[in-house]
Image (cartoon, rainbow, N blue to C red; front, side, top):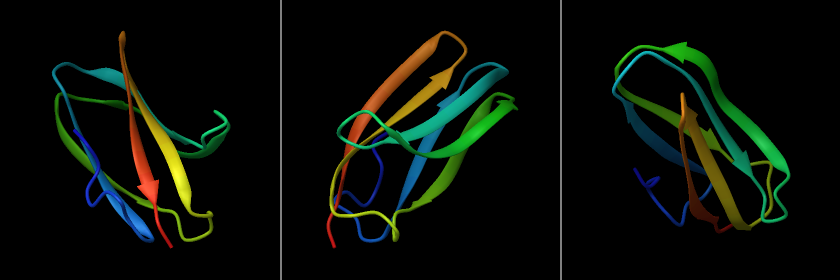
Length: 82
């Protein structure tokens, strides 16, 4: 799902669901594709999960977050406004 709120300052919530037990990696990247945070890196069972991203130490701009769960990969855009 899309993060909320978006645009955000300084934190936002990311929510995702996985149907089967999978290794889950949730990362945030800057617009240049450089990783700025790894929010989740764990084996997780089926269900809905929620995590908070605190960007108080980052500058304003567009960031991407990417969720990998097994063979599934999805990326979305979010905007930090300070």
